[in-house]
Image (tube, rainbow, N blue to C red; front, side, top):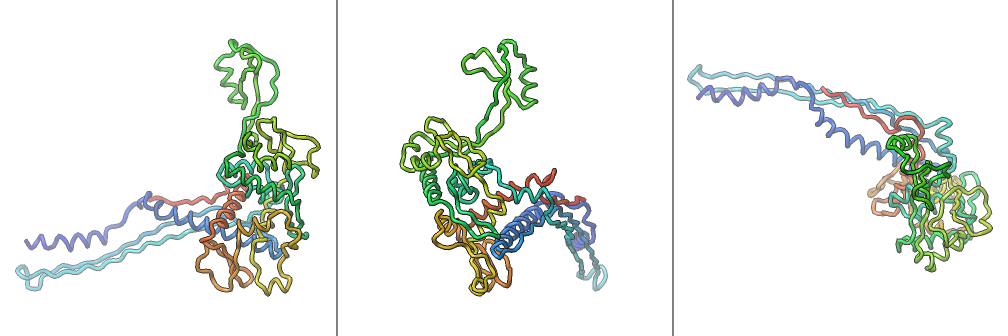
Amino acid sequence: MRSNRLIGPLLILVAMVLPTGCTNGPELIVNSHIDYNKAVRQVMNEELLLNIVRMRYAEAPQFVTVSSINTQFETTSGGSGEVGWADGIQGPASWGVEGSLSFRDNPTISITPRQGEELAKQLLGPIDPKTIAYLSSAGYRLDHIFALLVENANGVRSYTAAGTLPARGGDPEFGDLLKAIHVLEEENDIICGFLKAYDDYDGTVSKDDLQPSDYLAAIQSGKRWRPLKDDRDAWALHTYQLEPVIWISKAGQASDAGQVVMDLLQLDPDEPFFWLDNLKFQEPPTTITDSVRVRMRSFYGVMNLLSLAVEIPTKDFQANKALPSAEEEIYYLVVKQFLDVALHVHESNNPPKHAWVAVKSRGYWFYIDDTELSSKRTFTLAIELLNLQISGEEKGSSAPILTIPIG
């Protein structure tokens, strides 16, 4: 019986003094991955908001990247114990155990500025029209995408916000275009996405002459064997790629909103869909067309536009420290209304209590309220756009790499 009384204290003593051994790898991933993920996302949000505020104050934006996170985990333990009897073998047992356990995470985080010619081209150059289709396919509203990214659509000019130049109003019709697109979206009568576009073929062969190796070789070279429309037995080798298009249903085209879109963009109602492409000139098309040609903003242009939604402290506004938005009479585009609804960056003298993302600049706090869902969605759209623009900055992934030693 006395020996049994020793089992509990001795087990505690052994547990305290035995080395921890190899670290549990899966447990480390669970305890670290999500926390680092949250931290990196928070930094990206705060950095973009800070740069938007900077551009309202005519300051140059600056981006940095967390390129790598290397962390070392260290666990140490120690313990001591004693067991004795007050009156020899016959007396009650007395015992004591002392121990310590410590855990330490030593991360090394590499932060580098985003700079260089390639990055400048990506942020200062026009955004690819394909981005409209990507964002629309991801579920973002097409009217919001047009208001944020498009400066000109088939000659109908949007509002222009330039950091060092006075803001310029666009055509009144651009606001009508946005409203009409919104109505068509509500009725599911307009879709923006991708279509496989095949180039012209050169020569044909009989379908019976094609071997499995021919189909495989075509796929490996990015091509396809396809039959001709007027002769199903004659097959030709085609090259294809995904092209952005806008589709408007026949019922949508016949509606009041559809008529506005078709007339303003001078679209041909006989076409099954409309190509989305770059606009080379300001002038609208002289005849009906099968394409929606757009001139896109740069990402810096997008930040300039979003900076108009930043509240400016009265003292800074009166001292002309921040760029003015524009005169009320040149807000033809409904961009003012769009920004009032889509994004609102508040300012405060004190740390905000209900901020979704907040930064401190020039002695003030600038933040997006956690309850304003439209602002959060618009800001998230800008984050996704930034990720699309800088995704090709490096040959490898631009996301930070978290290295966790196991064992």
